[in-house]
Image (tube, rainbow, N blue to C red):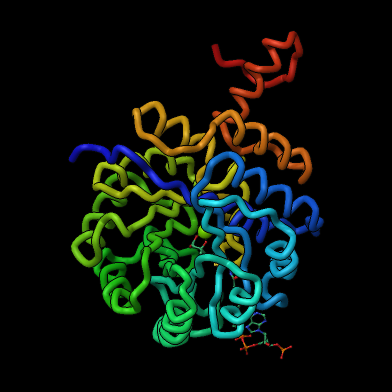
Length: 314
Ligand code: HMG
Ligand code: MG
């Protein structure tokens, strides 16, 4: 299969990234992160999450973030909404797109949303209907498609089964997630091909965490199946609070370097994202997890005659 000419990147750092930060991230930093990412050219930024603040305290300021951000025309601002209460918050905050979520394994669904897969889908149905009535775009995320921290690797038939059960909700996009970053390209091709027999491939997105360092290879594998929507997180921020040990999403800088190297358009300015990645990592006091981000930052520093301790790419 020929690779797509254009890929839409959904930048999930402000949600999937920050939701996992233990220390409180101040509102100014959250707002600046969303604004700088939108300015870098992303067509879609996952900016907020209207979930229980008892479950994910870091996202409790989502309404304030949405109220404060300067909105860039052309950028879709998304938020997670597990139930009607979440949707009400999202509508009040004027988000453009809402994300309902379930998983392929029962144990993860219980730990993440305190209910069974069937209950999570039943909860999602009225949320999607009401969101569409309100004129919002909708997505549904399927966690643990490549592996589950509690149940191991689910059969591909289990992914297909859950996808078939959510296919009729009427969502615009289907996020196929490797929650704990254990997938490898062969599995990704198998899962994506099976998913593409259930829903149109141009509505499937690859949402891959990078725990085992396979995520860039896995994105490449998904592109070969025809997937043209990729989720990533600036500086590789993040993890899942309900998947212990799982690290962040594939780093946006790494995905951009891959895509641009393949001659695929994204509309996103890699240099600007490198700046954001270095800035947010310093703000959070953590190492930037993007190999590309660190290499390009080191190269720039070397050009200015500074030494950074990072290996400098030629
Ligand atoms: P529950 O405790 O079963 O819900 O949680 P409940 O309906 O019994 O409500 C309990 C309390 O939460 C009540 O407050 C509600 O008002 C409140 P109280 O009366 O005790 O003061 N509440 C809410 N507050 C704000 N916003 C809401 C909301 N709903 C209830 N929307 C629930 C069920 C789903 C709410 C909870 O389990 C939850 O919030 N889970 C979210 C967990 C989460 O955010 N996980 C991370 C995101 S998913 C992810 O990262 C995976 C993804 O990236 C893909 C991948 O990588 O796999 C998408
Ligand atoms: Mg995730």
